[in-house]
Image 1 (cartoon, rainbow, N blue to C red):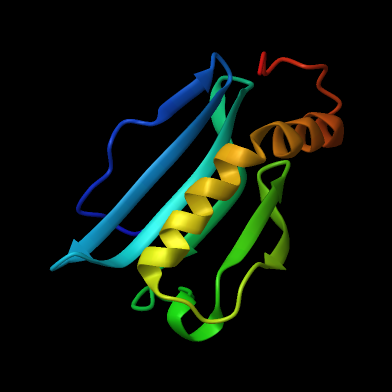
Image 2: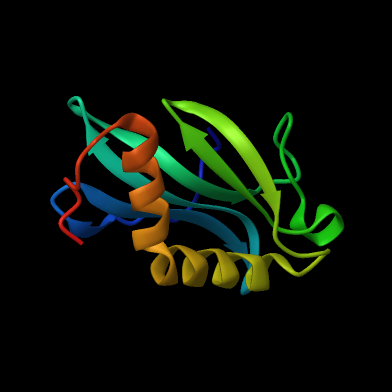
Length: 124
């Protein structure tokens, strides 16, 4: 995973669900970011959904050229990639990623629990 200049502690939404943010900026412009929804399962935080932008990383994504996409995870592995927008600024991509995860957290968590056969441990 990339190194970021700003990586505040995760925002806990319940005992078993949190949002993790990390980003770097240069003169007010986001240069790279990661926004991730996580679920506590089997003693570790599991990735549920991830957005990212890092044009310089090996295999990285550049939202200004490729558009914003959403990575869905299942059993610890990237399961599917969903295109969200066409090319946009990194600042706007970061904002949209955060909004999407906050607005759709219940949908993403319910699907994740269904995939893993977990019965409503999220308490959302």
